Amino acid sequence: MPFSTRGLVTALIFSTAAGAGLAQNFPTRPLRIIVPTAPGGGLDFVARLIGPKLTDSMGQTVVVDNRPGASGVIGLELTARATPDGYNLMVISATHVIYSAINKTSFDLFKDFAPISQLTAADYVLVVTPSLTPKTVSELIAYAKANPGKLNYASSGVASLQHLATDYLGALEGVQFTHVPYKGVGAAIPDLVSGRIQMTMSSITSMNPHIRAKRLRPLAVSGKERSPVLPGVPTMIEAGVKNFVVTQWIGVIAPAGTPPGRIERLNQEFAKALKQPDVATRLARDGTDAVGSSPKAFAAFMREESTKWFKVAKQAGIPIRK
View 1 (cartoon, rainbow, N blue to C red):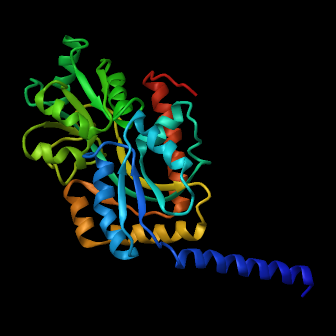
View 2: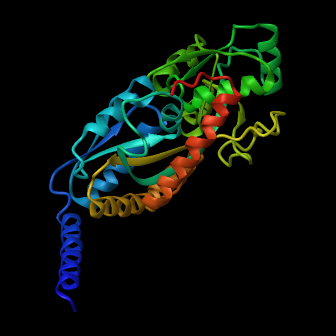
View 3: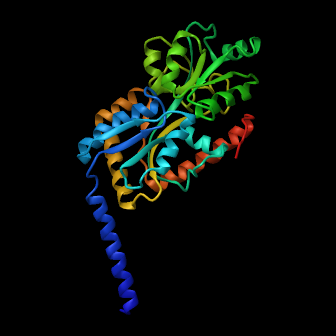
């Protein structure tokens, strides 16, 4: 074997061994999962559900760090600047991909982050405050047409999935709802329950406790089929809104430059956590599917979502500020 070839092979072996060593010796201190929304929403729920499983499996404390605001941009900027050592992670959702697709940001979603795994997928549910008269989607649309500007809806921020999904519904049905952004869906719950805000479209995970307690009334779910958690609630398509399908998903990312060995280790640990019976059962109870995908598959999925929601934003007339 020529010397140069031997040297290349030796270097590759050394590099592989070093990468394996990074993964084997990891972690040696607490990990942080940044949640770019306020406590109480779906992202926070998933992070706090999985965090203890990672602690048990990896032998280090997992700290959930809520950094709400600006449709997740505060958390994304913090994560992009964090040390790429595997100890700094962030849960991400469709909302953050959407925001990045239609707004100018200080970061590049596909260059400044390292995808680890898609964790979950869940349908949205359209809910209204019980004091509101409409009990079906068609009645809600009729009410909106008869009372222009009187229906306010909550979202987790400007250009969030809730924002686009609700404006998309309005565009399809020829009505306009008034957008009221919050720092997270959890922050909007008191105003929804009290009736100060009349409606929102959010994950079944975050809305179902309030539906069960009859503090909010469900009108329709956003999946292709009815949710087993809310079998009596029709899909948007059944309710007469053609081609309306929306899925909220949650994944986990790290700063770009995080060693591949640690990305792979984290991917395996998150997959293991999602397979724990109590985690899968808890997610299923609120209509959420555990996913667990490879870093490569998750990267491709995020690009597909970016393209899809950019087109929806244009169709719904939402300003593109790229």
